[in-house]
Length: 223
Image (cartoon, rainbow, N blue to C red; front, side):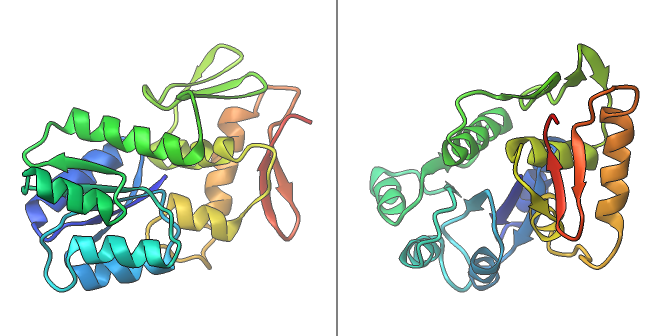
């Protein structure tokens, strides 16, 4: 899952980015409204965390612009302004949720998960394909009851493939959702990580779940 954080206070932005990365999210950060709007318009994010008071374009303007352009990415407003009128303005501008600073990171993370599930219309945090299971809350992965240890990037890649199970995901789609904007899409890193996953997910099992689609990408399915 790829998240954009638009926050001008660098300490807060760094804190949010670190916490999200520890929970296996891919994170881009913008420190002003102009850069934030630009990134939001060109990249397919699963969620935007947005401050209201920003240099350049403010958060409410960004919300309105994205909704005018039919960009339906969930938006979580994160701000120190906590009076009722500000909350109403944020939600009326197109935001999906509102959290006031200071905040407990546990609550913030719960809201992030809820918004992403709502977007995907997912009713559970447990993903399952054949005998492969992934728990999005605990980040535990099992196949046939056997625990599988994954790195942060391996987990993010597997989660994305399981969310799109039985559908082909291209290299471009993977790079957009699993890596941040600095990723070099011409490198062989995606192939390398898919092979890492194959060794951990499919090795030793008769039925293989990760399949290559020649010239296109990959698909996670039980043949």
